[in-house]
Image (tube, rainbow, N blue to C red; front, side):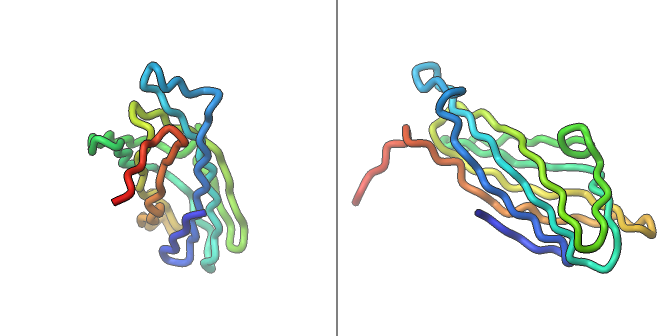
Amino acid sequence: MYQRVTKGIRVSVRPTFLEGQSDPDDDLYVWSYTVRIHNGSCESVRLRTRHWLITNAKGLTEEVKGVGVVGEQPLIKPGERYEYTSGAPLSTPSGMMVGRYGMESAEGLLFEVDIPAFSLDSPHERRKVH
């Protein structure tokens, strides 16, 4: 599991390779990732936006921006957790993701929370030992 804390908000990510949805013969590799956001701060926050950078093994990066996550803009109260699962396809057997969430405090202040960089690895990746 990958973790990062920003302003008392802990973001944890657990990626999982989805063999059954992948087709290596067609250069399709699919992962799910589960994100848990724990509000360790003293005030409620609302997740407003997401911004992802998804990089494949060839170094090609796709930028994804949007409102909320999985169709929601959750309010996370102090001490509470919010969890969701989403997915990402790549044309290579490995890659990485990193990003940030745009949050809004109870007073209406906007701030960003880092999402830790995490590795997308499949059993189809050829590894070289030097």
